[in-house]
Length: 372
Ligand code: IPM
Ligand code: MG
Image 1 (cartoon, rainbow, N blue to C red):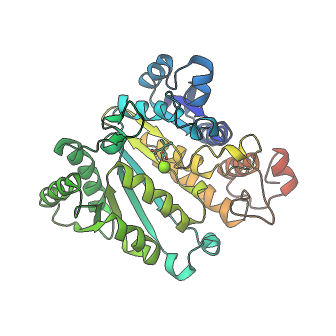
Image 2 (image 1 turned 90 degrees about the vertical axis):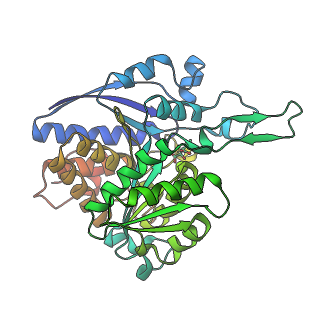
Image 3 (image 1 turned 90 degrees about the horizontal axis):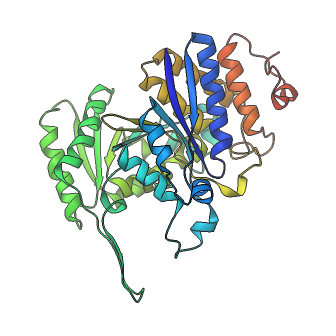
């Protein structure tokens, strides 16, 4: 299979983690005889610095002429700490999502046995947790009209949703839920206060009639935030609007032990993008300490999207071997830490030589053959 992939590494640790994801894609390509061609594009703060635009026209054009996008991360403190900045890196990502029609952001939450002790939550609470969040990505308060009064003392962000915007994502969530063992779907909303949430509930009830095998429940977002910490096992498929999805997916990452493990796929009718859920982690930028697993697992989701299910499975299994062996960056291993590059090297080597299981730390760090 030949595929063209747009690589938008972005800011902070984006380039470092994306490089490891490419290493993994290359290992897969080598092993299974595929060809992945990468085309780089500017986005975010780096794009503002070089072109004045967080999403230059060339980047958008590139994304529309490739088979998928591999996205890194976006944002720098320079803009985070300047509320007056008119051009902001995040606008690049938001515009990209909107222009490419990427309305469904799919964020799976998996737990790994050997990491259960690393989470801030108790082991018995998180053992066996396995759910997936379907976050609406191109509507709601993120994209409603924004206003700031001339005197700067009043601001407004409108949250709006149409039935059509709601239906297209809840349909995907229902379809997915109907294929899962537990077949449970939870809508997270704030229907006791928000009109938009009441519309979401209405549309979910209507859609539910087409999926009688799916058990539907509704949770207010405040309660859902508590339930996710108290009893995360109750969740199977979660569907929610843009901002609630942003917030609860960061919260969900605590269950897995590190936000550096959570991958996502952003899907539309025509295009698709694969991005870790974490941000640009500027404090770690250039230090080779960021966890590349979220980016690598995002690449696995890309492989699945291409229909390469065996390849995706092989990547996931290699990630599991890596985690089980404790070959982890400092977010998950403070006593015997490995670098971003080492983790990438190990996973790549495991894909290429799965039968070998003896590794040598020196070699991994040097980027030589990691398994000897
Ligand atoms: C995410 C991020 C983005 C979002 C930011 C960087 C704009 O937090 O993908 O979750 O809020 O969607
Ligand atoms: Mg977020």
